[in-house]
View (cartoon, one colour):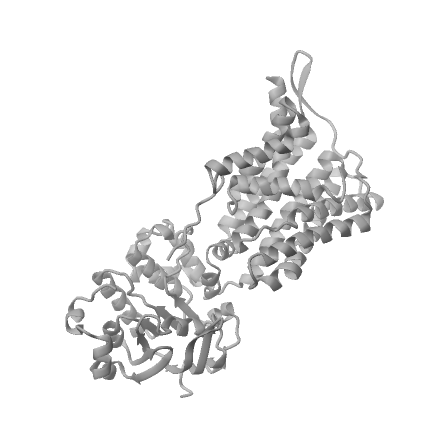
Length: 304
Length: 249
């Protein structure tokens, strides 16, 4: 029981990070119907920006951890958003009216470009960060096993809940979010209603990148090491989470992230850690057989 | 014809390589209702969409309020005050009726006037008020048409474009909608109407145009066209009975 609870805590933490990234995949799919394969690498860039910002702040003497974290968060979100915006502007928008596979190909291209750029600019070696947030709470003991929830886990889950809550309000309760949803449902009608569709699509990429930056920072704090390749595997997991939850659905992405995080963690804990990815992807296949549109996805109905 | 609110001058337009409009010229004067009638596939809806830049006119010019809008992006054309209830209504199905109306209000750019505009469209279509929190996709066809028109009105249009507002609706609802159009026009709104329901459209119109295979073949006042033998035989077969009880198409 104690062991189970510990894995649950670990799984929710990991799932939070996946969920934040998955929203970026699902939103872009929702609005322009493409899979942004570079999104995982945007997350990786976000983690690097967070690391550099952290080291820079320490160097200039900002040592109060809450202040430093807040500044890093703002810097990471700001700069990563610029990256997200640029990727869309450079690699996707010129191909908007092209055939369907074209932006998919440039997305894979952008993914490689970002990986190689970071590899060259920052080196291929693993970059460590001294543990910033330490300590935790012992929940209870059972025999020799102690259930611990660490401060960093609390921070990750709390940040995720806050950010997702704010994001949900933005999408569902503001004029900006309404325009975003309008473009998702009917781009032509949105334009006829005076919405600048290109701007809204840019905004979608910016929002997705901002969430990925939050995930990047949290990942960095949790694992303490990053390298130029983390975007690939984490990105694939988050993409899986988005499909799992129903691609195009924002609550689906959050739920999918959580489920993938839990499957991975529990499989590692009870079976073999080597096969955790196989387990996650197998579950995806099984879910897609029974729910072809994912857990919360809606069937695509062409309306006349 | 400098007094026109909207003018198309020898407009040619195509979907990809498929030409649809050939040398189309027409004028809409402020305060008028102008109807464009024609058979299915004649290019009526394309004319409507070309005004909004989708597709863009490949030759000729579209003038609104004296300004050339041929090359304007669609959302900027909308912001000039051209609001459309398009073919197929295009309700945002996963948004509530209220959110659809809020989408329409973007063009008005007058947040202070929102409540007043809302009251006005609810007065025109009381049924929408009861459905305000319902999703657009769950409305009946007639209600969706009302919503499409109401959404366009929320933008405080200078020119209202209506594409087949009677399509697929029950006769009683058609009557209701045409009465609403008449009332709006009486308040000074300029309306450009595309219809297959030629009798209703021409009866309402200050000016009418007939379109065949992407060309304007005839024009005149609504009454003139209604009286014309050519129009009668082509578009108003059995109009006498239709006048009393329009067949929903």
